[in-house]
Each structure stands twice: as structure tokens, then as C-alpha cells.
Length: 354
Length: 259
Image (cartoon, rainbow over all chains, first blue to last red):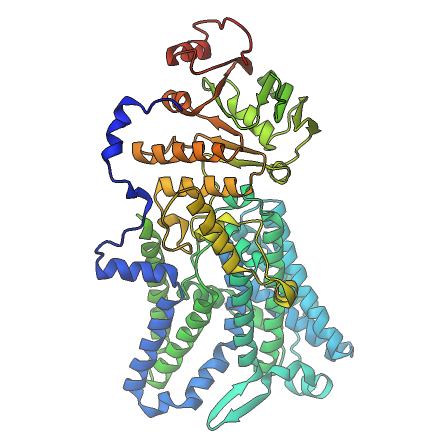
């Protein structure tokens, strides 16, 4: 090889350990930042534990009972499942505003097929899951293939699906007793068992299992790593040989199927099936749980366990403030601050390399 | 020359509307060499490299790899054929770990039921191979292979990208401006890395604007001008100012193609 250039000669005497990772004296704050960078679910978990302790001290044994704590879990099961679906999408740097109404229309279809049309409940549930998947695929096609921005696509499909839901159902509620009589399987997730005063419904267990399965998939399969890579830097993912289109399409479709699964769980929780619940802000609640759970809205960062903690945190706060007899608006306000704090922390963690 | 080139291109033409980016361009890469490609801005270097790496499809012309004609429709196909490209923006996923990045898009699954039915990744194997590759290239004493790439310095990232290419590029490695964004010390590391990869017998195409770097490591220099190969020179027989003169058209080369 030719000679080293003149100005580089001095490099011979320079520190050769350039590429090694010396552990310097870092401040406690920096170390905390690095810890949070590698453990994104830690923030919501810490805040969750703190809030349980605070409410436990403020309210006493009544709050700290296993009955109350499991009741919170029952209350957040549906939003937790929707949050899991939302997490998949937000990890790809997308957003799904239609996820709440996808859930409602899937519930209505399950109910109508089983109760009104008298089909076997199994088939009704399958049709509901397919409906959710189809809605997700529609979003995914527009985002991945037509390359439209997810916010606009799902804002549109939110309205389209909500209107379809009202037109199709004529806004008729299917009563609890009719579901019980003709399609008890739809109430499957209301089944519960007691351990002392703790009451666990199948819905709660389904939520925890779903999050566990998704956690495994996201962290230990190639597809899961690709979801992160696509959200992190789509261009780099593509050049690394990932078929970004297929990944996006599958993420939106799976999110739709999970939303339909949330529909099944919600029938168990609510008893009746009401098309008018489409006006409830389920998608915003799911996004709230996801963001508080530390999933970065810019994609590629966060752990789905955080979403579970985020949903629990909202549940704990609303139950705690309720038991303290506070105005419900305090819960709304606290949620708002939590969202802003979560995003601020996310931005801070991102600066870890700088 | 008695040795057959491993990668050739003949009469490549690429037009973008009225602009002709490649005008009957030729290209030859011989086994085990470092071929630098230099040229003024807009000379068509990028188009040439993109055609070879499968990122664009030429309108006309033929590319052969080891004597067989190839028609890449995407960078993936070129990669499968054994041509690895390190892009200027590195194509790394900042939030993923070093090991994840090295195996992105070609992950190794566990054997048996776990891999087949649960699609479980074989993390230990991937981590070990990633670490081995980095150590083999004398690249870095990485303590934590699970460190996110965004926590690495520019030179280290470049190192990971080059190591990834070297780990999988069985036939040809293309490096696009590998030292452009680096400091003096980090550039030196990367140049050493390039020489190290060559010593393993893998030929390298080096695109660079940095004349001193080109003259230091290249075995031959392909000078691109106005969409075609102007000449190929031996860096030992010409000076940097000669090269710049050819590149800009200030001087005409003696013979069309050396080597």
C-alpha cells in the first residue's frame, strides 16, 4: 500500500483505543438515561408502582385490596387489548384512528350474525374477526401500497367505518339477555373465577396473554425485529432487504384482527352490543395507553409491556380519584399531563447518543 | 490481462427523461483488487454503481458476474448474487442492536420446534457470529453487541456496516463514500478495514471524492466522465493532479484504458 499521508503521520502516536468502549465516569442522570434507553418499559412501570403506593396511602386498605386492584384490571382489559394493536402500528411510525370503530363494527357483526341471523356463534365470531382484519388490510393497503399518510388514511376510514356501522345496524342494540340466550359463547370473556376477593375474568387473562405473545413475537422473531426496523428507518430497512410493504400490510391487518378480538372481549364486559358505542373515544384511549406506555410516536422504540403498564396506570388513576371522590375531570387532566410527560421523556431518552 | 474480471459492464445506458446519466459506460472489476471510481459531480458515478448494485435498471447494456450475464431487478437480487453494498447513509437501523443490524433481513432461526413452529430467533448464534466478524476485522473491542447502533460513533457505525457487508458479501463489496462523514482518525480505521477486507480476497469497488484516500488504497482507478468510463489509471503512475485533470477534462488521457 502507498504511504500514509503527511498530515496523518501523527496518528501513529495517537490513542489506538479509538473504537473501544471505555466506561467513563458518567453522572447518575446519564446512567439513568442509558438504562431507560435500553429498558423502555421501565418508566411507565415505575410511575405505575408509585401511583399505586400513593393511592394506597391516601385511600388505605379499601384501595389496596385485591378486589379493587383486580377490578381495575377488568376495567382496562378492552383498552389494553386495543392498546396492544395500536402499539404494533405506532411501532411502525404509523397511527390508527379507526381502531375503536373497527372494534365496534366487529362486535355488531358478531352479534348480528349470532343473534339476529341465528348462525352458529363460532362462525359469527370468525366473520367478526375477518371483518376486523379486512378493515385493517384496507388501512394497510392505503398506507403501504398507495403510500398515503396513516393519520389521514385512518381518519378517513374511522368516518367510513363509523357510518357503515350505523347504517348497517340501524343503531339497534342487541340486548344482554338475547346474547345470553342465543349466543352465550359471545359472553365467554365475562367468565370469572375468584381467588379470595380477587376476581379475574377471562378477558383480563386474554389481555395479559395477548401482550405476552406479542412481546415474544416482537422481540424473538424476525418479523418482530422487522416491525421495529421499518418504524425506525424505513429506507434503511428496505436497503437491508426487508420487504417493508409486506411488513406494514401485515401489521395493519393483524391490528384489525386484534381490534375484532377486543370486540369479543368487550361483549363479555358490556353484556349488550350497542352500535352507538362507536362514539366513545376508544382509539384515543388506546393511543393514550400506548403513549403513556413509552411507545415512541416516531416509531421503532418502546416495549409492548409498557402499553400494558400505561393502560393499568390510567385505570389506577381513574379508580383512585374516583374512590377519593374527586371530580372526574381531575382524571382527564392528570391523563393529559401524563401524555405530555411521556412524550417529553421519550424525546429525552432519544438523545442518549448525543 | 490473463485474469478474467469478476464483474463487468458493457455499454450501459441510463436515461432520466432528457438527461443521459450513463452513456455507453463500461466497467471492469478484477478479483482481489480495490477499484476506485472517481468522477466529477454529475459524471454518472452513482448511476453506474446503482446499476451494478441493482438499485436501478439500465436501459441498455449488459452486466456479467463471473462471466454470466445478470439482470438485477432490486438490490436484494444483487445481494443474493453476492454483491453487497454499503450505502453512504449506511442503511442501519439506529434503535436496533449491532447484532440485530448485522443480521437484519437474514436472521438465523433456532433449530427444531422452537425455530420451526415458534419462529424463534437464534440470538446466541447471531451474537456470536456478529462478535466474531467484528473481532476478525480487528474492528473494535465491543463490550456489548446488544448496544443500539445509535449509541456508536460515526466510525463505529461505518465499521458495523462494512463488517456486515464483509460477513455476507461473498463476491463483491461496493462502498459508497465510506469516509465522507468521518474524522481523520476514523477515516484511517475505515481505510485499514478496506485493506483488511481485500486481504481476504474480496474485491472492492470504492466510490470516493477523497483523492488522497483513493490514491492510498486503490489498485486501479476508474475515471468516470460525462456518463462513460474515460480511462482506468494506475495510481502509481499518475499523480492526483493528473487524475483531477482527467476527471474535469483539463487533460486527455494517453490511452483509453490501462490495465
